[in-house]
Image (cartoon, rainbow, N blue to C red; front, side):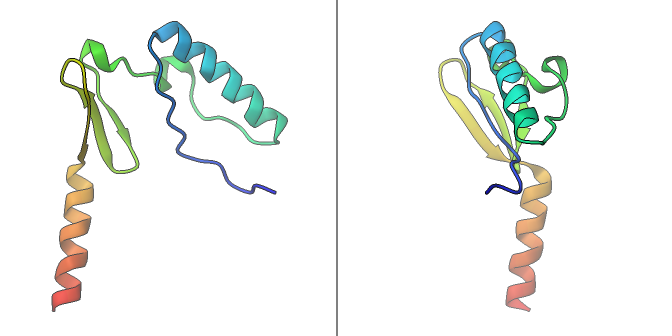
Length: 88
């Protein structure tokens, strides 16, 4: 039994492949009684074209051939706040 499915990341080689996988995930979620948020236009990011994606507190981008994941400013601020609380 699965109650919650969230924050799925699917890495694809092409936008067509990403749209296809989005449709499959949407159907899978519907078959499971859940709804997949968004549509391919809002959910698909082309990192090779310079777009970025934010996922689970990370900014994702490429530097040409490699995927880079860096903490978002919000995540850094949260981490800093929590560390400060631990040391006060």
